[in-house]
Picture 1: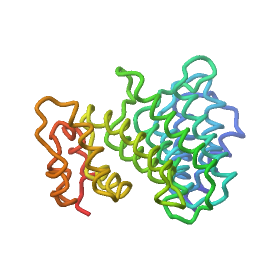
Picture 2: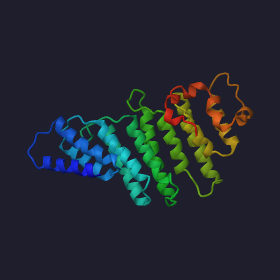
Picture 3: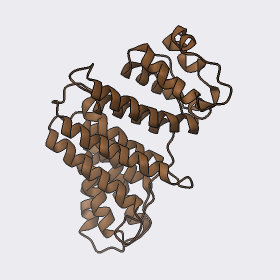
Length: 280
């Protein structure tokens, strides 16, 4: 934090001088942004980012600075418990992402990548990962809407630089698990929504070949009744010609070996993400 304060002090001295905005000037702002973000000071990083955008004069900006801020907010929200602040911050970072992605004069002069969207999706469920955030269904619903909107925008353009990857799907399954939770675990309405949501996301995940072990474990935890998980997985296999897997076979597989027993094409890309495929 001391290094960040020193860096910002130097930037403040620069701002008091008469200077021409160029790539070197932007790089000075970027260094301060990344330093604040690295020590978990999301708001201070965001403030410097806003200043950088204001003086940029449409000079192309470096995506790494925006992603550093989005990542810092996702980490910051893990500790947030105030529901109003949660929604306010989620709305703000979603707006930031949309300005990066929208194009046109009002947008930022930078294009988001897959990591940009993944940070926002992760931020949406971050407050509920510690199980200490107050229960509020409407807040969770708003957070889930932001996560799904971000995911949907990634999926719309097959030629974009921000197509979903294995991390995207892992985050979406965690978002469903955290944000479609219920104080009553057996609530049929919540179960139905979860199942339908997961079926849609899983179909895209398997089609794109991004299924990782961590996603299978999240699904297993979401559907503790083995029949539910087996039916969910079989619903994807039914799309494949010559599927010989049965519910009985799936139920006989130990959960640690389940991922290896699923069609290899489902994880043709996802298996290369080592962090998502570690042993538990």
